[in-house]
Image (cartoon, rainbow, N blue to C red; front, side, top):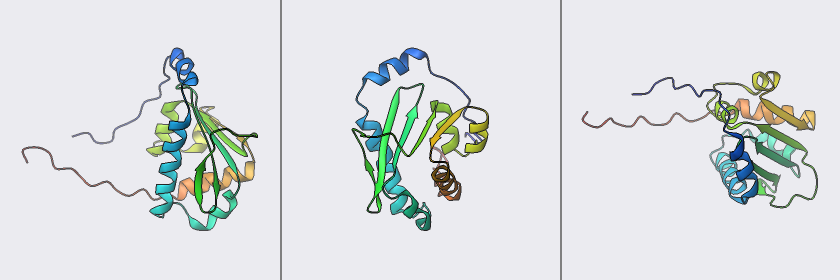
Length: 150
């Protein structure tokens, strides 16, 4: 049984980002927007902070995969933005390992930012709101799967 799995710091080879940048980006955007809207549905995101996101444009770039997702928040839902017409209000950029470490709560955004592993650009106040929202998320504990033969 795997316990205390640690996501190592890694960077994918440079050619992967070159290929990834040439691929359609809409699958990344739809997957991220779907996950964010699922978090809304399950009330994982603090509802009292969502109003600050209204009408804002966000960008997430995974540097070593060449992936990029642009989305906004309006009318109580996250929405994909497939062809942004302006610069985002808030943008995040990091390698895949940094984003995985954030999701696993192995690292916090401040540490990654100050270690120059996470780039955050745009509206500073909005960045703090988003950071605090993510810090407030209480991830549900996944059920333990029975091991075969037990």
